[in-house]
Amino acid sequence: MESLDAKPETGFDLNPEFCGGEAMDAAACCAVARKRGRPRAYDPDVVLEKALEVFWMKGFAATSLDDLVEATGVNRPSLYAGFGDKEALYIKAMERYQRQIADQLDEVLTCNGCTGGLRGIIRRYFDVMIRAYTGEAEHPLGCAFMCTALTDAPQHESILEMLQGTIEGFDRRFESFFSTAKAMGFLSKDADPKLLTQFISGMTSNLLVRARAGAGRVELEAIVDSTTAFLFP
Image (cartoon, rainbow, N blue to C red; front, side, top):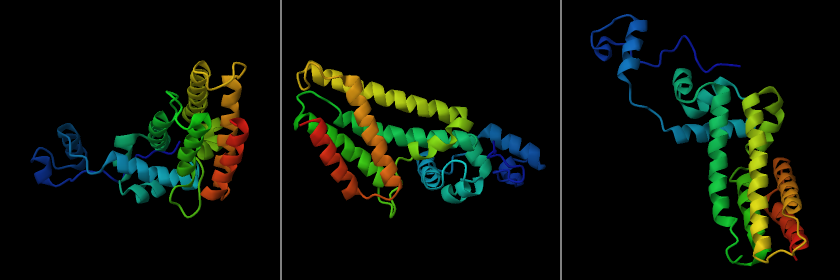
C-alpha cells in the first residue's frame, strides 16, 4: 500500500526560533515540534471533501498521493498524521459521505402517519439519492462509494468490510421501515418487508449505475416515478 509518509518533507519549521534553541539539527527539532504540538493548518472536513471528489472521479486505485496533495493543499506528512495512509483517508472520506446521506434519510424514512402515502416517502428517498448521484457536476458520477468500492473491495479488506456493512445497513434500515409501515396498516398483511427491501435495493443500484453512465436527473426521476407507481399503487 502506498504510504502518505514522505522522508524529504518534515512538515515543520526548522528555524532556531521555532525550536526554542533546544536543537539545531532537523531530526531533533522535529521531535521538539511534535512534542509541543502545532496548530492544525487545515479544516479536516474540507480535506475529506476534497479527497472525496478525487476518489469519486478517479476511483481508489487510480488516485495518486500527488492527486490528493494537489486537491487538498496539505502535504504528505500532514495528511498521514491527520488521516493515515491512502486507504484510511479513502475510508474516512466515504464514511463522511455516507453520514451526510444517512442524516437526510433519517428525516425522510419515517412512517408516523405516512404523509403523502408510502409512495410519497419512497419517492422522497429516491430524491435524496438522485441528488447525491447527480450533484452539481457537469457529468453525473453516481454513488461516490459504491461506484468506487466495487472495483477495489476484493483487494482491500477495509474497503470490503465497509462495503458489506453498507449493504447490511441498507437492508436493516428498509426492512425496519417496511415492517413499521406494515404494522401501521400502510402495507397489506401479506407484504414481505424483506422482498420490498430487495426491490428498493435493486432500483437504487440501477439508478447509481445509470448516473455513472451519464444519465441526468430528469431521466432518473422518470424511472423512479414509473417504478414506484407500480410497486406502491
